[in-house]
Image (cartoon, one colour):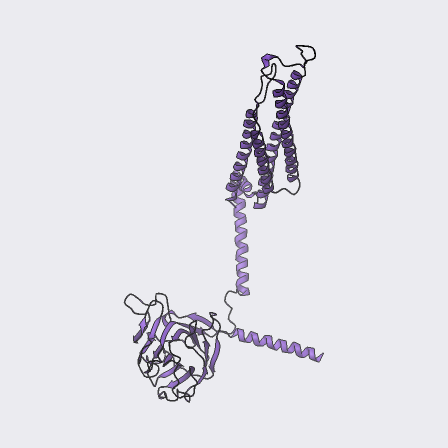
Length: 493
């Protein structure tokens, strides 16, 4: 039991600590007059808005080459406006690249009371008053501890020791290789409540939040209304020179949150109650105004009520499916009726021909009967015609069976649960394919013609194909018409 209480107390303590930390997070505000970033970094006259550059620095549309990879070069970039904020954060993005195994001399980020536009300390003035963050590429003291990042504070009286690389003057530092990286290196300097934090992004990944803390110091007092600057310098050795490119310099001011202040995006209970009361009052006035309008204009009120009783998207879709299924059902019934009519006519023709051929007439005893010479046909021609008619009748019966099957499926689709309009459309395509196969099969047979029969009529294949083609065209036209109507209706949903 005691262990359980200890766990609960530890959890409560942790939650309280997390809440305390999150409650003290500062609010950041972007300061555009103390920042620079491409593209369109420079103006038409070559100047940088709110910044000044000089020495061997070359400004372009995307970045600033503070120093090129030549011997004994110095360059600098300084803000024209001072920083009036007590708490601030800067993020400098830069590249340091060179062909040699070692580089020289390095790059510096400044926050000082005066603009150190030219000097011996990485292109900046010595004996500055403020903060200097140095990215030292060259090993002057022979300790094999470069490239090195260091932080140095100065009150205007200290002189930077080049021989020892400022090891005894630094506030803190860390070993970081910042040369020839696949991505730009970033340095984030945060000054909040007299605490200075330096974080480094080593440029090995494209993750913008991949920072590592290099230096953190408490009780650091920096002057107010200072200038931000970046400078760089190259050495005198021909094989130890680097390009120093400044990609961006972003500044944010930070504000200490007020204790008990309302968080952003949330409404206090008093304001919430006030808004709810105002909404209820407005709603009552609106309902009252609608009732008065309905009493004064009964005809328009009835139209309003009818316009409000509209169908939803789901109901409209079901109605369209049901109408489509009904249309298919009607077409199938009409096709079934036409096929029955064709079969009846075909059967009548077959019966007439059979009766005509079955009447025996003899010219001589013992000889089979033949048709009169006026008919113009012989027995084998009549037999061939009858066989062809029987084949056509069988095919029509197959079509009738297929239409009956489609009719049953259509009736099932119109039952409870609805149906799939795409399946019905597939059945129509199947009917069309079967009709085409029937037409091809009939056309492949030799045309025997239709003999004139006394007292009867004959349905030629040409009439049959014309009739079936008209039916097929009517079905395809209906499908196209229904699809166009559905497409036009879907534009409103």
